[in-house]
Image 1: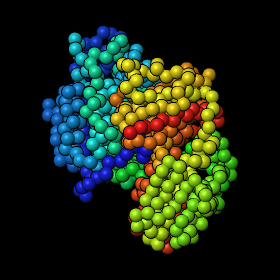
Image 2: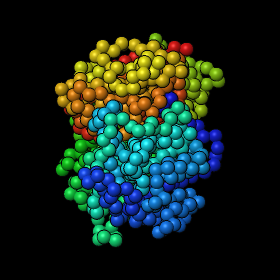
Image 3: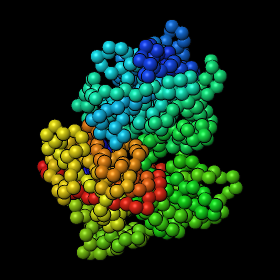
Image 4: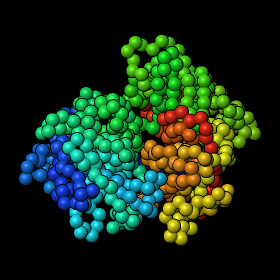
Length: 632
């Protein structure tokens, strides 16, 4: 069992240059806001079209995006070489969805599709919603809330997610920037200074979202930045006639000032600026592959935020995310710097809790450094038993002996022996990796990277043992019998689940603690891959109330890659944690960022140098484990 396919990156067979395409939507004028019943009316806006112009100009300047001319007046649509722009009357629901599809059809694997929206956002009260809040967020096109409509004219967040899934399944990265109210889950308030409208209140959707069966296995990344968290207004500032959204203003300036910034760096700047300027009433939201840059790849080396607290450095990562006491981290002022391979200043973990760690710098921090830093691990202390490895090749022995977390043991559970013109690493689950001969300059990097993945998972699982307070349920969709919510999850799930490679896997997790908890589910493959299943795609979700459940949404497919074993681990915490720091690929996959690894990086800087180059503070926690056997 290599991993679950939802984590698989598509291999790009073409060497063509990756491109960025965009759809820009800005709506000030609404067709039906004034004809609603008095308690459901919403006003036109003043700054959304201007925001669309600002973000287009910023991207043309910072990234050279060929956006074409800006629509104006009756000419409410324009098509540039890389962008399609809709404003006001041209931005109907049908036109927006068609524009998204048009730009997706023009994209190839490895390209990035940017969807920008400025306008009203709202909520939809769905009595059958699988979301813990009971609400779905919506984008409101020009024809939103059309009277006597036979279908919903808001764009539901479920429709947005299905479109994104369709795009990423073809290898196209999707970036969404929404300057509207409730845009924390993908959706401004209905007066002259804010962007939201009264919620929809119907017992059932009037139409089904786009058919999820048209997409396959999810391959590319997604990034979402919203102007305001759920339940918040996305506000406009400035005089009438010259209004501008706080979020877009901050984002456009950040793009212009730092064109090569990662999404994490853009988010850090924009969230801080908007939160400060709004007095905390508007807090933008960011999630997904924040370690990527616009048009660039996602670098999956784990990074952690560090807060400078007087003489202490408090890092948002602890035992629950694989951090160990004594490990060394390099400190940087931005995520982009941390992932760029630089050395940075160094610090060591002096104190460790479940969700955070205290670092001690090994040299004084320079004056003027920001209060929030980014840390990347450069030296890992493996605090569990050493991996017992039998080594049958004498030439490999010297390299293995450099790995202080490995014990050479002729009877070891793990074995390194000659095979197919090179060496094979195997373990209790079978073959883990095929490696080049020991004298190959790639051998040290590849062996270190593979064994590091094994040791990290083995040591983490030894700590993350069953602990009451969370219930995890896993089943095949064939067993669903029409059930689509989380009600099927119960307090006596079977310890082992039988699956086949063609099964769609359903996962549900219940907070069995008396207090609200953040819930995470990870899947561990038999080649030691770790995939964050819930929340998916780097999402950041609120704490779930006691007794409530969270589940993979119906439009997200999760299937095994082949026969083998799969372990699901549910983690429940009283504070948010950076669970994505635990993610890793199979032992037989050498990642492009292997040289950023705390272990493999040492071989990149030696005679074995490879030619490839380059959250929160939880204190209470629970764990549940379900094993699955995927049979041929």
